Image (cartoon, rainbow, N blue to C red):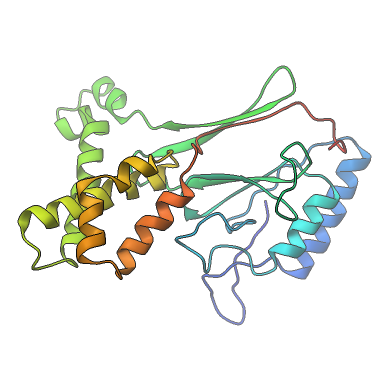
Length: 255
């Protein structure tokens, strides 16, 4: 567990590993290599830049130094949060590096409090591989088992989806105005749908979104809006699903 938060001389949103922490990590990783032990580092701030939408305050300020440490010991996986977007990415030292070559993998877990209210489950399989998948908290089953009578809890998946969709749409409609009921509803709906898929780490059908009525309204009515730039950034980031990952069997020290 690596503390990436900055407290001195003041509390900061940005993350950074202190030099003392890095020195300690070098020692632990060296001991682990000598003893044939896997190490799976976890930190709050992110190791790799994994978002076109959020480009500041997420990646550790000295991430290149930390990446160098992880790469030297060929650490298989790094887990972080902070971004609140479900992401999985492999580090490549330069563009065009074959996928088969070693590069540390990072999993960024999304926020449990944001629907679909999912968490990550990392399993060391019997064949020596590591598998990761997200699972939603089964609130409805808990509500039924404990005799709750609230439909919001008994059908939590449906309710939470509609709640978040309504919340985001309402926020967007507070920004886009005087375009007419139908246009505003279509624009806010497409933004909400993309936003929800983006945070949950789901693959987004870029062609389908860009051919939608709501997206065309964005292009026609607000082509220079930062919200349209956010839409495009989320779509570009979501060309694959980020909810499952399999790391084949490795021997400590192997690439």
